[in-house]
Length: 80
Image (tube, rainbow, N blue to C red; front, side, top):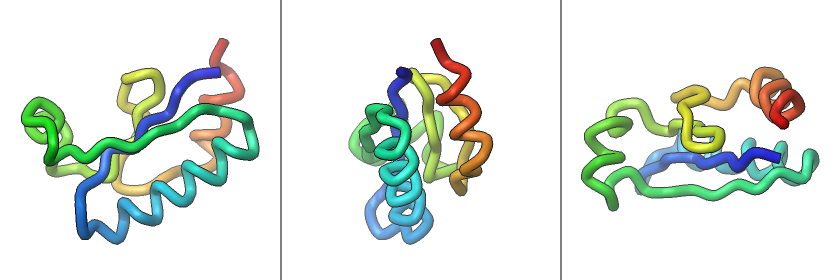
């Protein structure tokens, strides 16, 4: 099962919503997930800072600004 990462930043309401959605979906599917603060890493901030929250699957960008539940479920189900 792939690993999902949610890139967030402090005081971001959309980030809180995305983390809750990813946590719920990954728990249902048995997928690992984590979150990372884009502002704690200059490279992440430069790459993704204007689009948080960002959803990564195995380090590759899957989406940003909101979780598209059906699309995320499909991506996790189709991964080797």
